[in-house]
Image (cartoon, rainbow, N blue to C red; front, side, top):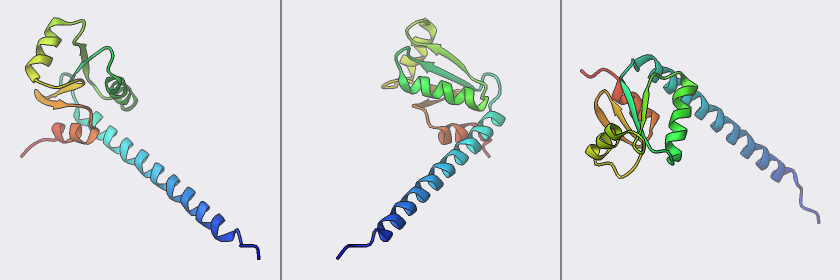
Length: 120
């Protein structure tokens, strides 16, 4: 007897549909967070201490640009003041984000948003 392929096709279609929905939802969430960060971040609110060889720094830079977020950046290899700020942060690596003078190690859009929201 030959087994029917219908259950496998249905399962495959279900996996594809769930994957597509999940990808769509993640993109939608990223866009919402990006828009909120862009709306809250004013000039001087975000400063990224980066390294010339940091892949996450490159990703963060692209994210900021994609969402129109105001930020400044300096390189710890090329800027002595930047290196001093990095060392003062006692961070194990880059990027270090100074968000309204609060140190955030690494890049996480949701944490960035929380750091920009008014407290009170």
